[in-house]
Length: 284
Ligand code: SIN
Image (cartoon, rainbow, N blue to C red; front, side, top):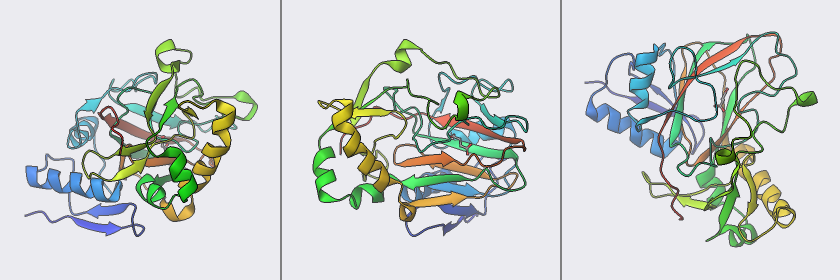
């Protein structure tokens, strides 16, 4: 019988999972163990998986139906895969995911999570960070809790990639559709959501896509949100992954933020990414 080894990365966030090979189908019991590990640890790191695309998609299906993400040009290899790529000659550009965010929170049903498989890496740099939004909510100072409890936050896809782009330059390796009216419309989601797997409450505000709190303007919301963002990305809520080729990361998009560190100009970095479906967020 396969036994998973689950080693925590920080006290509450992240685990390194060994003892399984996702290049082959896994049993129902093992699939359930993986879902439970993800519900508890929110991001899992599986070394030496080296999956082909069929195996990556099959592994994705353990966590939910494979979702085709909108507004990002898919990999020529497969329409359900995004090639997260920065070429060696793409210096001083913004990169995909290069700010704290959860994915596509401006959709009616934001994704449940994603899988990211390292293919080609810089010799050093290009790490990814995650931040635990369950602990961030549990430790949020009382006056900020009072501002967010029972309230909705407004999300829109319009700001995508607008920040951290030196001289406005964006990637040519990842093509993003901008100005789509459906992505750019305002959508309200609870600022604190109930996780459907664990029942835990998690903050659900997004430093890229949340523009304001419902019934407040952007100017009134900004000082509240900037204090919330300073809290939710504190180092004690974060883990950081240094990639090795073949590593697979699986993260929960309902209760974490993530950040792709763009510190490797002059080197090629390629990862393959898939996504699984989520649901309309429910207030905690
Ligand atoms: C992302 O999905 O936001 C990109 C993560 C990464 O490139 O490390």
